Image (tube, rainbow, N blue to C red; front, side, top):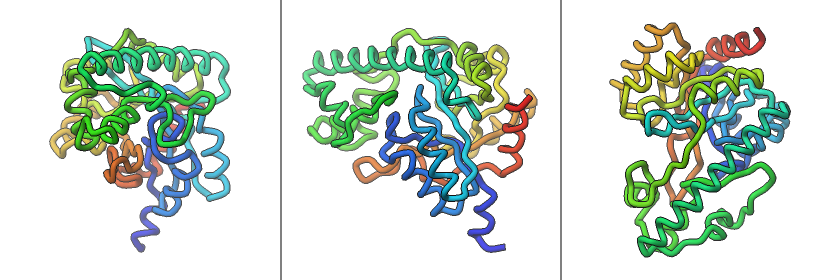
Length: 288
């Protein structure tokens, strides 16, 4: 079997489009996934499903299996925790209203971060952030810290994206702000109520495995994202064992946000994948 044929049974289950903080449109992501020989993909924008229908249509034309998804921002024990949702209904009215509320919190956070930056003598505006390099916001779309990082680099306040996050935007950095959010339990419940299956995103980024255990026990997701660009090999091994202990699925995704300032953020699309069997199980769970 050739390398391309092997890739045809693989899925990338974590990526972001211009509907949140990615650089590629939903349709462009589908084309990239097809070009890289994937069997399918999930679009998991932050707190929005605005790009799902466009991606779904393009995937049908490209012959790709498409999973409607989302990544919900939550807060637990003073840390930002993200919950992925797969096979959510993008037309569920209550779910859409709930996501709109989350984006409102994100907007508040953006304003607070910009206020902090101004106090630090860093002059960037919300209009500059929303411009997104000439791609104005559409209905249901949102901006995030990567958009701010772009502006910080362009205006000379940081040397690159990583520098922008390290200095100003990462958790614990000078301008970092996190207003009250819903809990991981609420996010998992919302996903299930929208017909989807919750999976805990990139647990290695939280730096607290006891908190990860607490979230798993309380929110009861169906899986853990084990393979992720920011996980080292020992992280993967640890979370595989944790998944086995709790009887959970192990998933993977590139968390692809596109190319910013010449660098891929986080991982290259298609570089972190799962076998079709994992997707089949997620689909079956969503139909129960």
